[in-house]
Length: 280
Image (tube, rainbow, N blue to C red):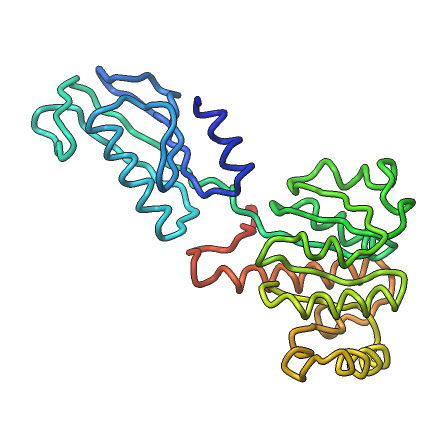
């Protein structure tokens, strides 16, 4: 498998990895500038020159993976008999600078249950971010290619689920998924809340609606056997406090901002900088 196929493999399997590129060469070196390899915690693909050069790059890449680094690094190595040669001697006489780039192969899973006016606006915002976006609706008409076309050109990987019984799709989501419940039907919302609370491994559960709706839902969910601690797992209303606008786009911006806060807080312990970097 070459480095390009390896990139696709890591993306498909959501496996962390580092792309290593020969950024610059001075003098003689085993590979030319632009040569690449991909490194995971337990495998590597392609080559940037073998020997001490490559072994040092792999060792550094795996050290980056172990601390979940997401900032690129430059590594310069001299290929002479006087240079450090922990993994063997290379005497080509040149100097090689390697660029080590952590890959965004592990993405959060966000599921929107209900792709109505608010769901579509929210999906449009989230589709611009590097995540796995699941769009779930019991109504096939809400999921037509024409309607969802604006969501398909962003950074997100979008999966569309037409599900007459939406809670069945909920059970297919991976552990750690974030779900937002905003369907057209309060009965669907209630069934989804019940099913979501029966999954202890979801990262978060958000429910759109009023305080009166939540009072009624709490009574119903308690009758289904859920405790106060269970109910506390559901965030409702969703969105940043202090934003009172009712337009779908306003609600979507508020909910998206709150979700990004949650995602960044979730990763703060593991990552040295935010998941979604501000651009200059």
